[in-house]
Structure formats: C-alpha cells, structure tokens
Image (cartoon, rainbow, N blue to C red; front, side, top):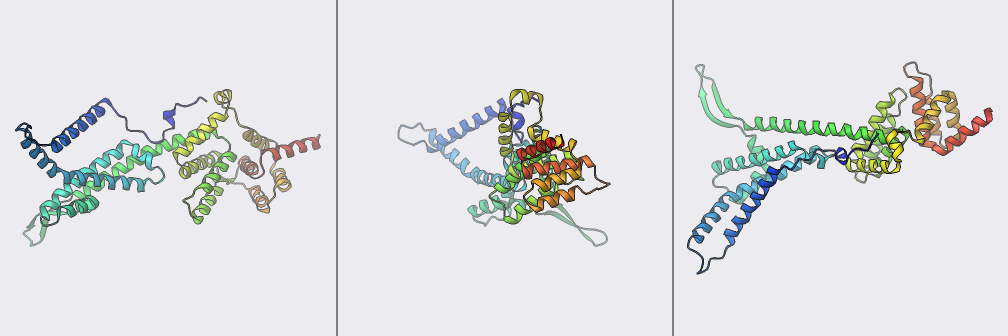
Length: 362
C-alpha cells in the first residue's frame, strides 16, 4: 500500500482553472478597470473634447446595467446559501464541484430575467425596492405562471396558453443537485476506503468515531446521544464485519468532515513506518483481535470479560453477544466481542491477561 498523492485526498473535485478561464478573467478585470477610469477621470480645460461625451455614455451604460449586476450578485448569494443548506456536512466540497457553479450561473440569469419581468409589470415600484425584492425572491417570480392568451372552445370551456418557466427552473435545480450529490458520493467512498486502509481495526475506528461525536460543539445533548446509540448498534454480531467497519468510517466522515479525515490520514501515514505502509502490515490491535478470534471460544471470551471489565454493563453486553444464535456466524460474534473488549479494556491489559492464561495452561 503506497501513499496516495495529495489530490486523492480532496473530497470534492475542484473546478480546474484553464488557460482560457485565466485569459477571460484578465480581460474582464482590464475592462472593469478601464470603465472605472473613464467614469472617475476628471474633466478639466485641457481634457480632449471627446472624453466628456465618452464619460457620459459610459456612466449612463453603467447606470442602466448596475441593477442587473446587483440582482445577479444577490441571486448568486441565494444560490450559495441553498447549496450550503442542502449539503450541510460538505459545504466547501459541494461548492468546489462544476455543477455548483453551473447552478449559481443559472440563478444569476434567472434573477436578471425576473428583474426584467418586474420592471415591465410593476413600473411604479421604487427601483431600489425592485432590486432588493427580486434579488431575494426571484425564485418565486420565476415560478409564476404567465398567461399569454385565453381561448374559448366550441363547447364553451375556457383554456389558457401559459408560460411556465418555474417547471424548467425546478427541473434544472433537481438535476444539478443530483449531479453534485453523485460526485460527492463518489468521493465519500474514496475517503471511506482510505480510512479503512490506514485504520483497519474496528476498535480504532470505534474510538475515533466516539471521540468525533463527543468533541462536536454544535450537537445538542439529544443529537449526541442518538449518534452514539447509532454507533453502538453497528457492533452487532449478526452484521458482517466489513459492513460495520465501512459504516463506522462513513460515520467518522459525516460527523468530522473531510478536513478532519485528511488530518487522520496524515497522522496515520506519519505513524506508520515506510515498510509497514508498503506492505500493509496489520497493527498490534488487529493482531490481538485475530488472536482472540482464533484462540478463544465464546464462553472463554465471556470469562475474560468478567475477569477484566470494570462495569457490569460491558459484561452484560458480552454475555448477550455470545449467546448461541443459528442465524449468526460464530466468527462474526467473536470478532464483534473482540473489538468491544479492545475498546473497553485496552490492548495492554488484554495482552497481559492472555499471557497469564497461556502460562497457567502450560
């Protein structure tokens, strides 16, 4: 297992800045600087005669388009706020995707179209109020049905010929959000796989997930308890181990975010030696779990828990997990109990107890 390049640790695909985009941005800023220079250029007696008419025309042009620019900025702000609220766990990653920028651009255009509609239909409204109301509520205006004509059929029934831009707008929004979610889902899987590569032990994943939930400052007490309950449910002897580990890794990602996962991966790579990274050697915790699974029966693991556990709740959990169940695989039961013992008791006390038991048997 080799170190992946840093780009693979990015959760959302960044919008690639091409040469054409750089040239376009440069030309835009040069044009903006030229327009500002023309508008603020002082008129004196020595100024050429053609400067004043040019300045008047440019000022009038900017005065006409500035409402649309302001409405477009408000529309883009609304679009960004919607994306952040939709993808609350991965806001930065969602905004890095190409479809998010397409969606923001469509919102800007929709806001400008809405301003045109309002200026045509509400000529008496204050211009400043038009800009503010359209910039914030352009989506409601776009969803308004515009009746172009009415007809009366031979049977006396009335019909309408209407323009429904809201339907097209909603369909595109759903398409863009779906594409963003699919891209984030692909990258979520990549992050989970990398977590499993560097933290193969369920005990380590469980500890990290528990700490991640506990250290969140924005969770209420009820939310924290619910997430801890969901985490404990994954330690089910009937559930396949790989499914439980993948689910815990996803829970770490959902609760900690991509930056936190990148920090965990960086720490894991720093703690592993180059040889261990290259060969993918199991950790001490993983070896201990396999020893428990291979060398101990379910009753022996219960006895070990009764001997070392400090709480009755932990012992009861082990007893319940060790109950014979024809629907559960014995190896899965032992693996679940082994992970639980490592998490509750610790590696060193378990290793010491196992060595003492080996000496007693000799």
